[in-house]
Image (cartoon, rainbow, N blue to C red):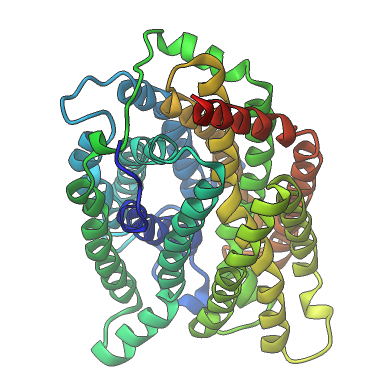
Length: 461
């Protein structure tokens, strides 16, 4: 097998910039776009209010179902890629086919056929959100499975996942600039708020689809991977994954921290504009501060993880994030300039952002390698899918709850209430504290000990 170089890692990780863009579009702006505040200038495009079971909004129900579809398709796609006998290997052929529909579906979510609310728009948004999650799975499951196959050294894997996350975060950073770009479009091109948002997302889609194709045409999978194809069924593969105690602990911990993060991401624009009283076009300052701060911490997090392990940084990151969620509720009570307070808050959350972007994937790859050493079979895809299934079900619950929660205490004519925003922050913080408790049970010494022993035995041979 060829040695994985820094150039190869960069080529492999570039799609994460696109994923950062698309994820920001959906996680940070979807609810804001379709459940708009009066000050945003956006028209109401879909049915508002709690119309499902008396507690769920249309956008909350649609996105929650999307996460369920995403979760259910993960193990199916993983099993297909793990067992694939394609002459060009198991992962990249899937990525080539589904890169374009993945990108286009992310844009069409925001391009409803009518500019007034109605059933047609409801159906349109639902169909394209659900398609987005299917195509996301068909591209990202093989993409994510390829990295632990290509890199076997835990130390080098930390560096690879750091770069992996860096591209995702920089893509998210461009996504966070959306309000500023929208303002520019409105002022320079005299576009309506609705068209300004759509044109901005169209630019993101064009950039994204180009980057999704980079590893498809620059990396020859066979040069880096010598796979042992599993011969057991999907159900047997899933049972095998869930028999691994280390995998179960990490999956539950990542379910909790991911759900807490979902609450935060879905409400971030509301927190900035409604709780911190920062104008929409200035939100980029806050978001950019947190992103730049997290990027600056990447080397420190990587060094800490390599020297002392990943468990303690993960626990610390979840604890700081929980505290930050609680502080959001009190930000209007803190004396001083609102922008200064918001920037200080952004700097604090940059630490958990750095930790939670870099380490979860690397920790799970350690467990996958541990299992491969123990079993002798490569099942990276099914482990990744099993983990995704659990964590995405948690995200779907958060997505279902958040739109209804933020509507609590809304004034007449508004879709968002101050009391609801504070409740969302408290719930998110409590969930992150639960993640701290779960990660405390992870036996990292055993996992890394088995990997080191296998490396030493391979060198001795």
